[in-house]
Length: 102
Image (tube, rainbow, N blue to C red; front, side, top):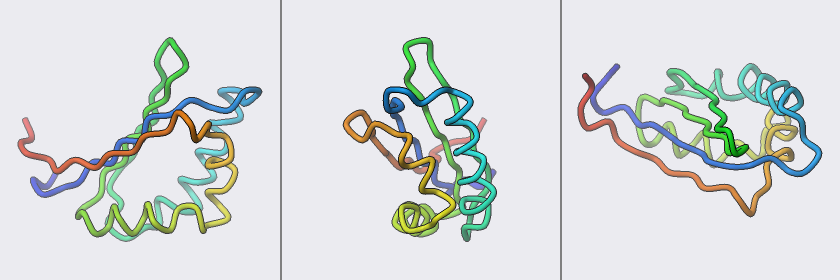
């Protein structure tokens, strides 16, 4: 892992009625059809807490790569189902520069 790597963390809950299986299916479509093809994409993890909060953690090579991927996410048809499953009122996205890798 490169030291100047960017980690994007999106925290959210799903809309009422969206099952875990439904979100995971939509996530795979977004992953395979969009994110994995983005310039600078390195890896991704999707985590869920006991209270229903999800964390989507995506690693990019540069800040510009992360910005471009985030900016174009909503425009890509492969990401629509995933985006539509998220309760926007709970969503928060942050970008972090890797300061030290152990």
